[in-house]
Image 1: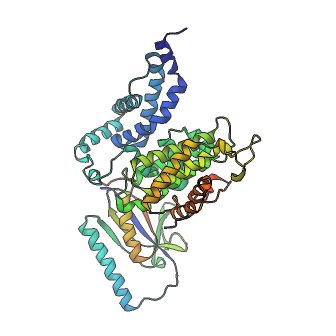
Image 2 (image 1 turned 90 degrees about the vertical axis):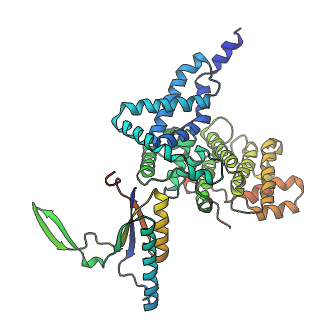
Image 3 (image 1 turned 30 degrees about the vertical axis):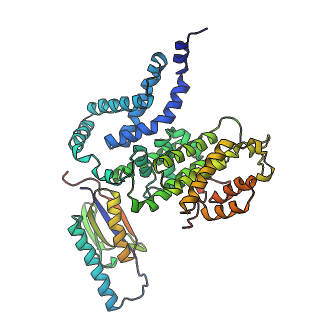
Length: 345
Length: 120
């Protein structure tokens, strides 16, 4: 028998570091982009920090705040690397010049709590980028997916996806797509592509059969994670909450949706004992909060939802919520061509 | 400050409702007001409306000599009707100027960043 310390150290294996990478890399990349103003510098440095973690943590154990450790370490890696390159030294001296005047006095006035990941998702989903590029960048930078994973999710060759990412990052840099949360008057237009990207990521994972770990599970999980993140960062946007509720209520029936032979089970035939009650409760609580806001939008489907809920007995409410919230017909086709929810404002 | 090209894309020989003198005057005044706004905001670098593409002339090197021919260089349905060069902090700021411009002119506008800040 091992002692407890050895067990704890043993748990920090490759898979554990992988999970932490998945959870934390988006935040670190986002922070480093703000500091260095360069996506490639940020990505490389965060990769380097995780490579270090993979060597150190299994022996030393987890640091108290792994995410903070990664951000600090990757910042130091980036500075070291930039000092070694002449272009990097230029960039660093520019940063030193810019820093004092660049401390976001404007952003502070907007009155929202700023999170670097929120800036990053608005940059990734800027309308000047194609939808394909928006989805790829979001999964790569915020989701921490490797290029080949993003490529597999969207059924394109890895080289094609690599090219798509390179081109998108080049455009962000050359055209100076800003790294900030849009102001309130810009939000209606700018929030829409963000919600659409998260919805597309979910749908890309929705067609894979149930059971077993597969890429579909990861994508749906990632979409829900992003929706949750966005909902926590923009608590007063009912459409964001509506999207999260939509994804939760859809996901709650996931286990009941496929038979043993992977064929589809329609709603009326599903074994409701297989529905995830915790997700249903969370989703319904959000729906009720949305109804109180009374600002219906495509992801909330507010009017329909409210009307149906009043008419229905409790047992059928979930199905009604689910239908009302679903913004587009379930198309089992190429995810990149999926219809986006129609705007019903 | 980064600079952006705002190019106004017009369809050649497009049959438009001919504008009345009054409409033309109004449109002209709106364009002038927008240009004044660009100037007072410090965004104005240069801009103007171009004459029809069949007034263009092309020079090119051919066998070590400069050859001059009748233009335009690219034959296409769409042509460059005019352009602005604006100085803008980032793409969003450039897009804001482009949005105002297209609202007045009615033609699509392509926004493209210059390679680098001149003299920076």
